[in-house]
Image (cartoon, rainbow, N blue to C red; front, side, top):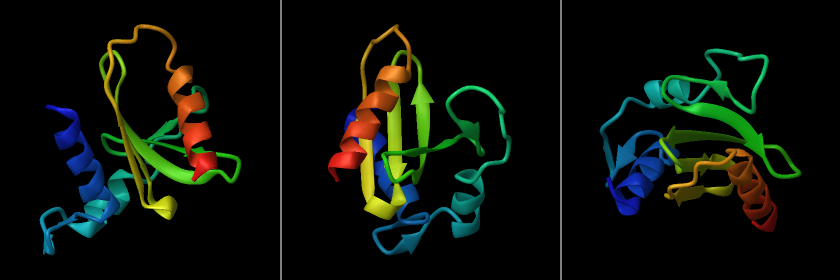
Length: 108
């Protein structure tokens, strides 16, 4: 999957499952899957259905993201109509992505 395909998935979820005017994923599934279904009580994010859920920025914008191996991310911040995609081979702490997201969200 390339970054353009990753961004399309983010855009699809940003638009509640609608692509080119057609509902291809039920809106209720989008809402359920991007809402906390499992409160981890530790770590940096909770979990929906295949999406991680947390806030970003000084204003704590609700967000959700998909995380892949070695720094593959799809971030969605609905209130800002923002989709961000990162792809890397970074083996360090994921906190660098939280810092980047906080900076980008604050800049928006």
